[in-house]
Amino acid sequence: MKKTSFLLTLLAVAVAVASVWSIQRPATPKQATWDDVLAEAARGGYTILKTDELIQKYRENPSGLLLVDTRQEWEFRTGHMKGAVNFPMEPTGWARWRKSESLGKFLGPDKNRGIVFY
Image 1 (tube, rainbow, N blue to C red):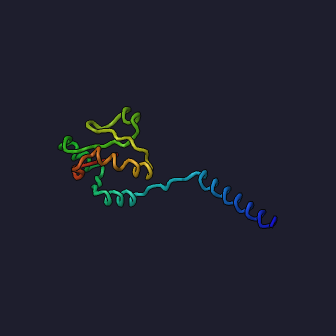
Image 2: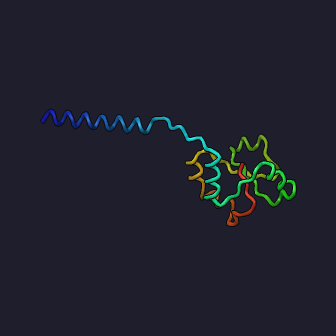
């Protein structure tokens, strides 16, 4: 009986230690690759523009673009493209998932306009 109680106690302690370790260990986020960016854009129905394409579109018709700056507000205040709007978002998958509904409301129903995130 004492041996069984000891083993159960030891098992409970081991499970508790493993749980605390699992929860508290630092999680290193995966570095996004260009393929990840392209896949996420395709899932969201967005078009990826190269820098020179963006500059050309911006020079031709700046009011035809919705430029969304997802940097933090203090970064946005230090400098941004004229006409850009700020939608601060942490650069993590969790933040994108958490704010996806708010971003949809922010962008409005016509998300197929020329939308650029930077």
